[in-house]
Length: 79
Image: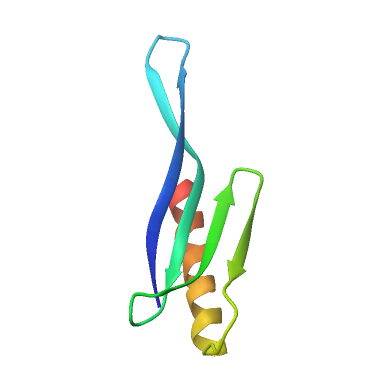
């Protein structure tokens, strides 16, 4: 399982000393199988997360591990 970035939403604000501060507030990623076919999507933002899986025959264990890995890496990216 791999992932592909679809969209990243960045919020720009200006701090007290006039510097522009960027913060990632949302990420949408596609979950890809070993052949590069999209099998689902994960949407994560500053308020929560959700994911959708496409119907069909799936390797349940591989999908589960892929989602967990993505959620862990997304959490590390947004901190």
